[in-house]
Length: 384
Ligand SMILES: Cc1ncc(COP(=O)(O)O)c(C=O)c1O
Image 1: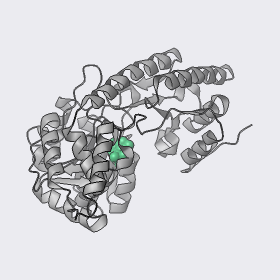
Image 2 (image 1 turned 90 degrees about the vertical axis):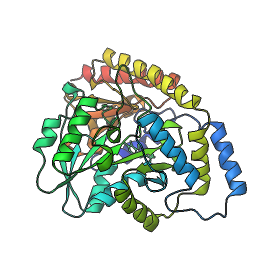
Image 3 (image 1 turned 180 degrees about the horizontal axis):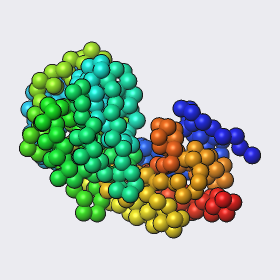
Image 4 (image 1 turned 30 degrees about the vertical axis):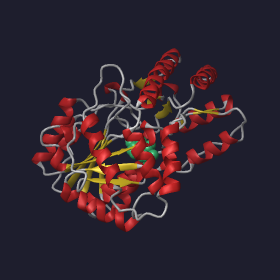
């Protein structure tokens, strides 16, 4: 007999319980399971030996800013000046906080398509900005309807958040919708905060389109990216913001005031990642494709209802057919079969009917986790 866990500590408590079993498989984790490619590690070692005492500019070393400018041109079709329009950050997380603080003043409203990455909610609280949620649902693969965004605009609206592919829904914003979001931003003079962190992981025939690459987008968009997902470098803390020089001057000032420059070791590692061989990224993208199929086939077998992941590394499942709240379902699956899925209830009170799963386990572990989940679901449904 297990007791029900509730509240904001729910996920931590589930993780703590998961650690008490020797055979737990964590199917909700958000960090890639691959090793950082060896040439990147080698570059970091070299930087340790050669550059450890250098002064680090707040905005990042110029060779890395140039490599980032080249990367966002090549992959995202965004033109930026490495001198004034790029700031290197401590991972995506710092980039996110800097963007929010650079744009939002107390009382300003920002439109946030929901569900969304939770740290945006936390960053907004610190900025004392006001989140205006625009919900979506599994029936439309969690598409955010531009008409709903338009309806949410008020005289206080300052910004619009666009995360594509999204965490946790794995939805990719189409070119048409993106252009419509830009038109709305132009009409109401909004800044767009764009998060492209999953841009290299796209499935089926979906295409990732960066906001700042479309007409009217660049001059009003701050774009975040990081190497955590694309090169499996979560712990290296290397990310960036690019955008128009006026907004970037604020991002740079905030960066200087908070953490100063980013670790020189990680910056040289990042330079090696962006300028060196790219086959590791392709390898990971291919693996995620295979794992996604494995996961979706198994979920279909279990009769699960989910938004088909268009990009990223997640699948967001609507579990309302079980009659259980996501906290109860996650608890039962964990206790019964030692598999941890992340309950939506741990992130937001409005997400009680969802759980998040990811493809971030090696294939054999994923297979075993899915088989155990199938057994747990059968046991759960048998007594309903
Ligand atoms: C949408 C999104 N943005 C930003 C981040 C932060 O990335 P990082 O791990 O580089 O701090 C994450 C991490 O999961 C994310 O999912």
